[in-house]
Image 1 (cartoon, rainbow, N blue to C red):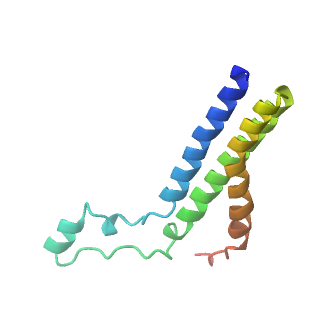
Image 2 (cartoon, one colour):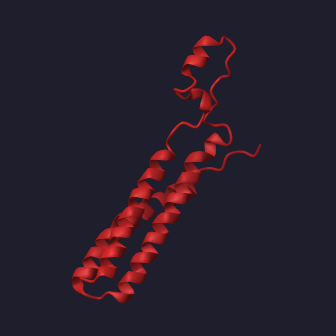
Image 3 (cartoon, rainbow, N blue to C red):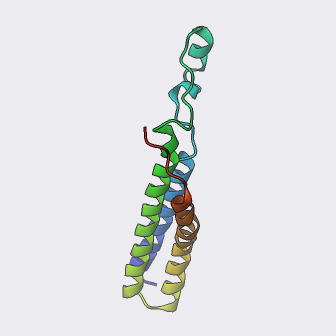
Length: 124
């Protein structure tokens, strides 16, 4: 197995970790007042601001933003594997590169329709 194929497969797996981290971050609450940092302040101050509603902009778009960035990284990983497959034809290299790209392909196949189906929030 060539070092180039091994490096490409390793890099694609690192990109998979980036995609997973972006998916997790996209599910986190975004209101600063809902965080643990301000929990004591909210208890101490009687007129503390209410946490932002998850349906208010920009809080409603955070998950979609992270999903688009994660899908972009997955597309880059698939293109990287395709370029590596052009140069590396041995069966072992092909198997390793395809195995490294498979999670990205599954993610693209599952997340893209969900992202396209998600209704647009009303303007304003």
